[in-house]
Image (tube, rainbow, N blue to C red; front, top):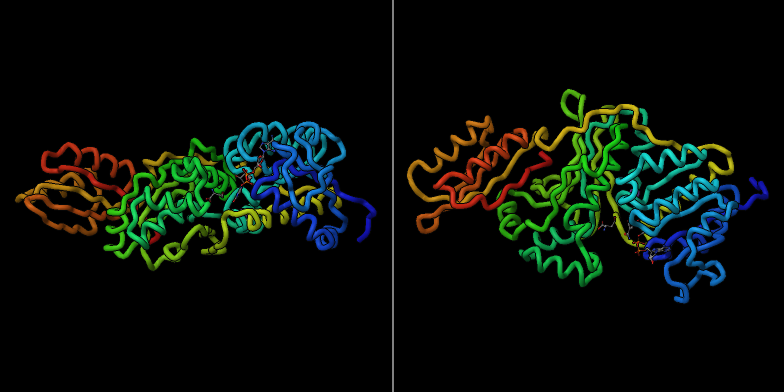
Length: 430
Ligand SMILES: NC(=O)c1ccc[n+]([C@@H]2O[C@H](COP(=O)([O-])OP(=O)(O)OC[C@H]3O[C@@H](n4cnc5c(N)ncnc54)[C@H](O)[C@@H]3O)[C@@H](O)[C@H]2O)c1
Ligand SMILES: N[C@@H](CCO)C(=O)O
Ligand code: NA
């Protein structure tokens, strides 16, 4: 098809991902044109600092005025790769107002204000695409948004943050503590100078909010996601997991309740059996399981981060959106019609591994067991190891509501014979 038309594209942000997108748009120009049906031309690149050498990007395309760029009025597509809430949000909405469609990788902004962005896109008849926002290169947004649009998704479970997976993997394989593993992740460039967003689970929680929204056709905000990071995970937790034939992963889990009336979304470290495929996701890789009523279990695996892998997802979106511009059509907008209740963490039903330091005296085990029984939490296994009048007690429960487990722990902490509740970890993937 030769329509004689050229599609004009502006790029906002030229960091790890943006620079790869600019490079690929140049090196793959002919293939992109053939696949889209018209050439895509990069007409401007907004950067924060001018005057830096940017190999492969003609200097005359660079500008430090992103606002003026998105207001040009002749843009077909704006690719936002600045990140963060502002100025990204204003730039994206301004791009819509001036007639462009938008491709972004900005999970923080989508989790904060996805509905606002969708509304702006719909108002101006534009597309909003964001495959790069969740699990980088791995096609996951499009499968949920399009391929599974005819099915009923029951659960999304996976590893969606590479930095924390690298740290936990390091702790597992080397016996290192959290701080040493974080130092190594920083030295190797996996963790950022300020690792808070990754290690405290904010990045994974934003992705969980996006995934839950897509999976359940319900608005799920960042505040709806229960979030625990990995900073409290100890070498002892990993050792204990290994003794149980498990490892520890930071998981994002979005589930429909058994009665289908509500959904939950959570991010926390959890033990998973070594036999589970997620246990063999090493280093900074991501992997996500999607369970749907008709499709059954699907597994998505690959590079969840990195300039080139993430740029692959951005370019895929660019092709899709460009085709729509040529065909004067649109991709899917927001789908939040189901309006399911987003239930609190207390409603989540799962298993627990609880490690207690107790006095090694007659009746202590019975006393501890009574607390579990009082809250209707059934014990699966108990393992005790004694040392000098003290004992460490590891209790693994059957499935129980999180609220019941929290009540058990609060009561255990009050017992004279319980010196410390050393760790509480959920057990998933069985
Ligand atoms: N790096 C990854 O592996 C990865 C993976 C998935 C998604 N993402 C997302 O992609 C986006 C970009 O990530 P990144 O890793 O390339 O970040 P980055 O920090 O490397 O790049 C962002 C760039 O934007 C520039 N910038 C900041 N303010 C600007 C402004 N007002 N105008 C123009 N430029 C401005 C910065 O100077 C920087 O070069 C983020 O939303 C991120 O969450 C990144
Ligand atoms: N910081 C993120 C990048 C991808 O969103 C990670 O470690 O996975
Ligand atoms: Na993706």
